[in-house]
Image (cartoon, rainbow, N blue to C red; front, side, top):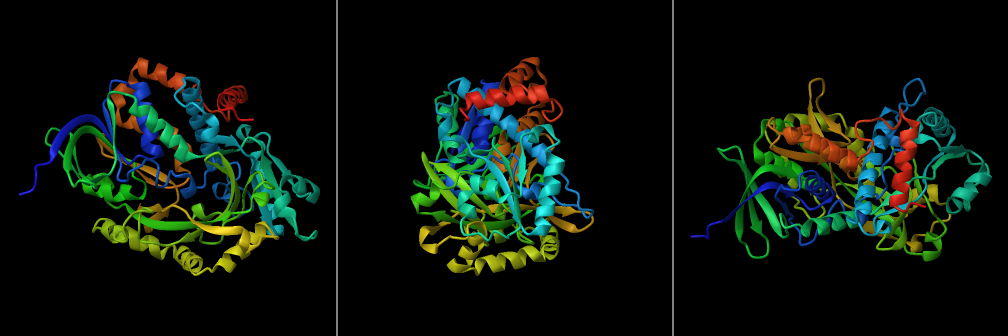
Length: 497
């Protein structure tokens, strides 16, 4: 007979030690410091999957340069509602990080955030017209004041000299630039947040713990069953609230909970690779995050960009990402993840979504078959003088795009993040990908309001929330003075030059 599982009880279980759980744990501890928390991580370190610097774009996704957030309409106009919403959310994240720096919880801002200009660059008359229309729509909005547009080669040579070397003088191109863009190392940020949480007597981090099951108890609490991947020891942890922030694996764990709200959700995994520059001289010639237009059928995470990064204190240069396909839901997952996620309740939405996204399937097949020289050809559109010897392939993280029921199409593929929670708010999971990490703070604050409604109504809670996020509940885009005040405070606290 096997050993009986050890039992314990806490108020909150956070599954997955990535940026989402780290953010939620920190918010809970600031707003309700009496709550006991256990963070459960399958790997032997925190932030090793999607939150790791090499596994994500690292862009502070503030919609300053990402063209997929501003779709072109049939009449040639550009819709910017989503961009405004994302820009607002990123400012909320920055305010919270600024508060944590001011309080000494985050010690060295430069370890996780740096100012790096955000640019959009397009090629050819059609895309230039689109970017011009996008700029015209966006520069009127308060959140995008300071955006600059140019088609002038001389200006472009000053902004992005590496991209202009060897380029034909007759090539039609244009770019926009926002100086206040950022590069965020979410791996470093996550590790700092978790390290702080570990200093608290009522918060515990458990590594090498794989969640095997999640069941509802008669008293309304949840029992989370785990197995230690080193010793084989099993544990059963009872909690009043469970958050599933396990990246791509969140869907599989959500299905184990059995809540009716999870029915109909599926997932489509998309992998990725970077070209990473190995030539220091080239790296130092480029200082911007330059985003282009995605290929037809490409998922948002595959929008091409030539990207200045700061990782482990060193400046780096990446290009990509190149999409790929794997049935794994995590970089260190199982090839059985996708088959295991298919249930009677989601098979119809998944098939429907597949039939309505044949362009994506074709795109992924093409990407998987690309040789190193094919990858170089894509880079040469951004950097005409690129040589393969200066670049090496780096495997990026796995993302799982959300598939959900749709009354009209049967099932649709969602390119974004979505919180799924039980009716009583006792369990919640975060599904999806971009802009995810950049908007983690507002996502988690809204989750707390949904899952801890009584606490969220108290005046003490609201007062503390306003201390953490001075602009909470207000629109920065509609209030120029407040936007300037908030951005100035964040800039100073985060030491953004």
